Image 1 (cartoon, rainbow, N blue to C red):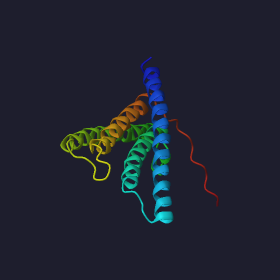
Image 2 (image 1 turned 90 degrees about the vertical axis):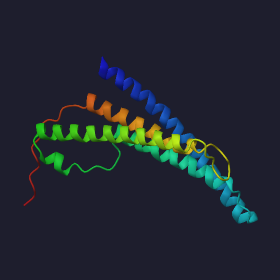
Image 3 (image 1 turned 180 degrees about the vertical axis):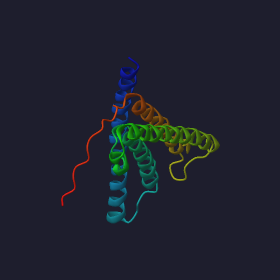
Image 4 (image 1 turned 120 degrees about the vertical axis):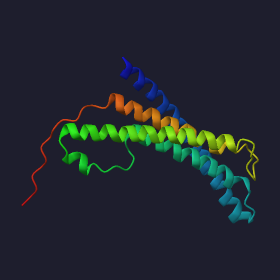
Length: 168
């Protein structure tokens, strides 16, 4: 029951993050396209487009990092895990999951503190509150921690599989 609830919440979060990533990437590409068009056609690029693109890029990359934890498309080397007996490989998987969970929590807490420190600042060109930019870190950290927790709770147990014979 707990596994199913965690998975259901995670599935909803993934759908929400996917929509946000598509919207943010679209806005970023539109801003960059507008900047390039105005620069090359009129030699007068607007100052706000670069700042908006940076805001969208930051959120897009950090949200994608969290999705990478959930969907395991982040960089990972399984060379050692594949060579260990199943119980040891499972233990190592759990240690990696716990480290990922702690990293997400640290990013969320540290990002929250930094966001609070810069809460009164505004961006230079658009003058949006700078916590909108710095808020990506605690949101991403919380998502990473949640998805790591989900993987720890729902991951299947490893089975011993014989290593393939090397060609002679």
